[in-house]
Length: 126
Image 1 (spheres, one colour):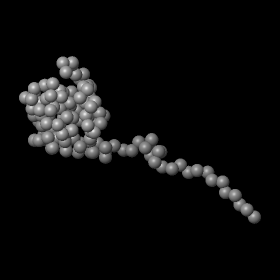
Image 2: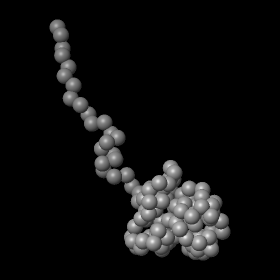
Image 3: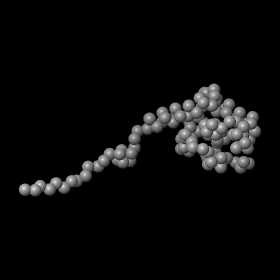
Image 4: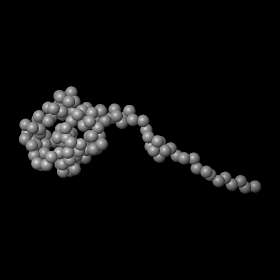
């Protein structure tokens, strides 16, 4: 993994493509990255942490040293004002849920969930 990571790419490695089922999609990770000012590498580490991987596995997947993983995690804790991995995951979920609740429904959403009145033909027999 000697390639450079694009500064605006949230899922720039093959590792990110092969993650197990994720709680957050790329759009939500991009929001979190912007909200907390995380680097591309910090996002990669955070995604792997949130998938339940330990520091050794993260180091192997990203081809970095164990101490570097610890540094990224420490920086994430500082930026998020948390003290452990579970708190980090919960903070991400809480932030995303707050954003989802705060967003007003779009016109497309409303129109797709409200049935339009249909014209009915009534026949009267004598």
